[in-house]
Length: 375
Image (cartoon, rainbow, N blue to C red):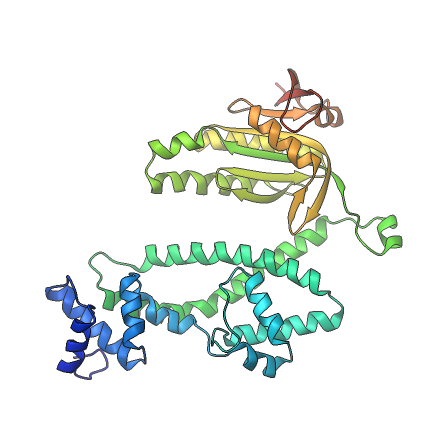
């Protein structure tokens, strides 16, 4: 019997066998596959779709895909919202999603709402270039959120001994129930970060006169990374290594209190920035202390002061490159700073000269100083 009470016909089973959809399966596993295939056929999936899913080991995910999938073409969204078809497809590419044709049903009700919002932004005067930049950053962030959410759901809701049949409908039900509940969480996080950016922002008289924010800014930039991370990969199990990175990222976020901001984490490294170098040095020292308390592998940090260009939520420029190079030669469990950083907060920390260094991509040798807490 199928889950909806309909009997599975003998000719359907024969079709599944002929298509190779039951190859290598016996007993309860085969019976569960038969039940799942029968119900998927009732749900409208073709034999070709089922065969492709089996070959890719994603048969149990087809119901979830149906729940989360699209129902409108780009043309239909354009007719509903007035946003051109070309722009709908362009936005999808900017989000990092695969190319699709204008007649493919890949857009959902949420995409219709998004298209209406984009039209509002355009009518309010936000340029297409600005929308493209926001969309690219959003796509990168949502890709990470989606991957993390998928892994968390699997860990929480998969049980030992589950069959494909069990997982397929459990995950589909959870996706239908819990995905809408995630939207307020994402919105709240965005509003909070937006408020914090406004709270810490500065608009000078010169910027008001020019009608735009300045390009480059003078800031302190810090990189902190886990020492010997590549070697750790051969010593630790994948799950344990992931735990190290997760804890490190959490600690980096914890020390990034205003006026310090966490720009990003990249695997085993974190990038922090502040217009107040003393606060950034303190945050770096605190991060090293908390890493040690958490019994994680050693971390080192490098800090530079200079000009950097904010772009798409990231920073670019000389100060960023210099901070990265300084981090690369810092010793484990140390915070190494350029002379400009030391000169701006000379009395706040104990400083020791760490020598003149030739850094890759930097013209002249650079004097560096190690920062420590005052005794």
